[in-house]
Image (tube, rainbow, N blue to C red; front, side, top):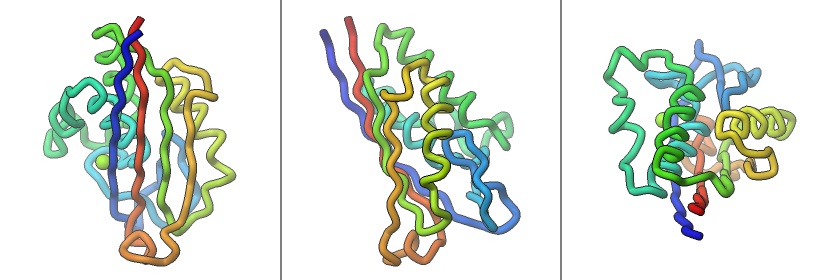
Length: 159
Ligand code: MG
């Protein structure tokens, strides 16, 4: 059995007047993430990890931020396209693990919903999708609530 590992990282600024969308779930907050698409930083990091596992470049290559086609895009739809690219090459998702670094809001009540949305799009069981949330202990831009960052790793398997 073949194995490939990939990692992904993304960060977006928090601004007023935007919804906060993480893993396809809209989370109540006084600010949301800025970006060309829906700015779903969690989904973007997972996409980059999937692409990285197969050395297929990064999401900017397939969904350029300046392209009007992706303005306000639902990132879960983009994730579905990346999953299809992985499958077309004969690979399956073994598991995904992620860390969301956010000072606010508290994400614990939303983790189950995020896991189930990502698992649905990746066509895996929810126990194959890990989502952890931590703060940055007040340090740096994330600690000052200027943005939210996400780290992701994926393992792909090939029969
Ligand atoms: Mg992004």
